[in-house]
Length: 158
View: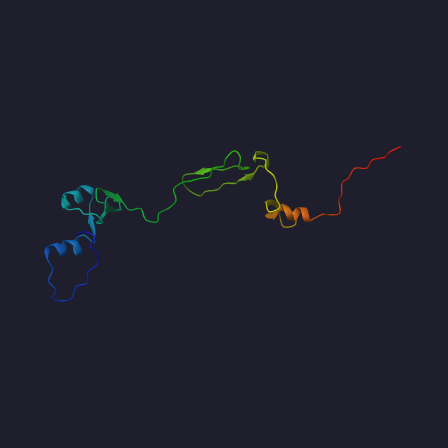
């Protein structure tokens, strides 16, 4: 009956030994000196969903139905890996396994694959008027700039 949910008792209610085991003992965090003490105390009476705390390692564990598993909880990030592909146009990723993580990704256009530009394509650029902050625009916006520049071919016949 482990994991049978919550039961609210009233004064004078009678409960069976099975109910007591299920609702009282199986649904508390039991504290043991170490895993040997836990295994000795419980024998084969562990049930899925039980929790225990081991003093020697300060570890919270739960029984998953076949073994005791450490409950990790929210925890800290212990490693970060930034990977860039050969065709991403980025390089400079780094790996950190402890402490503060810092990495600079550098845009490397010569590593990007070739493509055909469409008007809705987004183009990244550094804005020289805004401390070189990274901005974006579309290829169509660039085409719309115009600027009065025209190129042509002049033939002089004689």
